Image 1 (tube, rainbow, N blue to C red):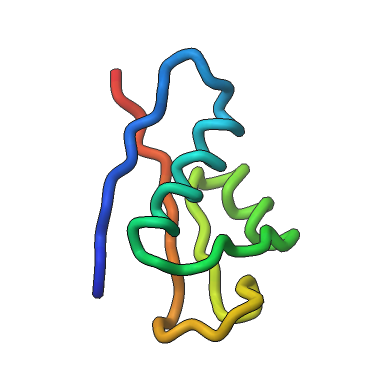
Image 2 (cartoon, rainbow, N blue to C red; image 1 turned 135 degrees about the vertical axis):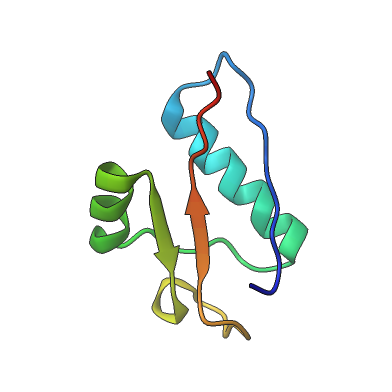
Length: 75
């Protein structure tokens, strides 16, 4: 693992808005462009609450193998 971050999201947002906002914030922190969601990412995320974005998800060239996001629920 090269970098790691946790992004907390406002309680009043929908799950989709939380995920998209957290991904946007992580991309800003890591100084990378936002990835494009492909069908495989949507399927993985719906079933496991996590997915990996690889080079084919990015318009710009990336210098890492993948960007992984995962929802961590707090009780």
